[in-house]
Image 1 (cartoon, helix red, strand yellow):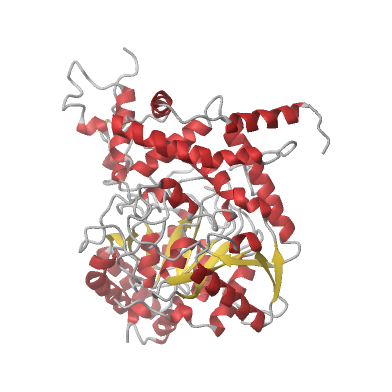
Image 2: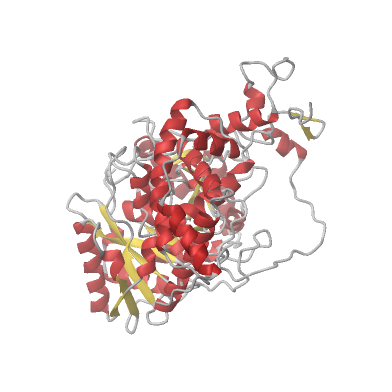
Length: 505
Length: 118
């Protein structure tokens, strides 16, 4: 039996019946990582010792009838943006290549308290900035000396920024994973790697201990093999946190209890702007077929329009860099991270006459440690929020943000959910967009509108192109609409088999 | 459409005119931004970023065409405000050893940094 192919649900069943132990499950995943990950490169750090200790502890608990939860003993992969106490956390950047966090993020703390097992830290675009995992400073696919590769076609990108987590789930290198989504970073890699990825409502999940990219847009979420697994993991990730003042006190529903398998009466809005020009024809056909499937299941398909959505990418590429320039100011070489204090200026410090100034420590540490994309976004953010430009760019973007949210809220008065593609195309080849940052940004155009509005959205497998490249389907909900999204997604997975397909590795 | 030259309209016009006449970022402007961002750039980087950032700025400049008179800026989608934490002292569980592990230079529980004053 291929243990690595189990879902959270099926693995929990076998653990509870005694058919397998968590140590067996964890060992089988660790073995597969050794065999397969040199080619896929999902992981920056594999936590073999910690994983086996946690698995043993889980088996002990289960033997004495003290199982903690539905995810007790389940191996989970964690995007290397979440602080894990005592375990190297890099944000895929050289500026943190030796960083050992002194505390744990709230989300991972909740998972470990529920008994889950940490398999390792997955690769990502540096500081979550990117849509391909190509901006990572780490060559995790050691056989190719490259960043993470798409398990469905090793010549193509896995998406980003949560590319490592998506690849790990798709390639059976974990049972489930967690990622973050600021402009599509869970949904887009989920689409390119044929897995399920959910970005919850802003405020549903605590951001404490997750390295901040854009504080008003970031959300943590599950990346799993099925919608049901996403519902289970979301339940354990969610909840109010006093350390995150943007987290909501709203009660956390038991998302996976009584997941609907039918969609009669569900009003699905199809935003015409999301199915327009620029969409790869195969992507369009697969999404249209999925809409037909929902219609067959009894959903009511309603044509809607979101004319403001076309400005969302511009809003995002103003607001996000501004928040990035503020959030990345802490990487200054003083308290942690790569530091010119250690490496010195021309080898002379601190006793030389020509010693470094404080400003040199900042500018050199940051210039040496950050990748090009991080520098670009910091500078873009500094510029559009600086005196003389803030009104025209930053303030205007905040106003357009209000209009985008208002438009979504109005549309949701008439429909329950929106259905749309996740990205204009399937996985592209490495290097295709790295010379043209703007072209890379444009690939986010269908995921980005949701984040400034704080809405929940999920990507789930909808089919494959003739080159056997995955294509996902996006379900967007109103604020706090996670349950409706999970219900609709679960129903789709009862009548389709796309999510069961596995890449040949 | 009623064209009234009030302050909101003047603001919008300023935004539109500004964004429409935006020239490409000069090397001096990039150098200024790099200094604001505390990033020491090479000459090659300055030239490359000048092109790339100008492209992005041109793209995001399209927001100038959106009418936003009387639209309040939206910073926070949660609707929350003034979220207070109880004024209670709690230990963090973080030790000086944990911190020292990552510090470039740490002595007697303090960070050693270059002097700020001459």
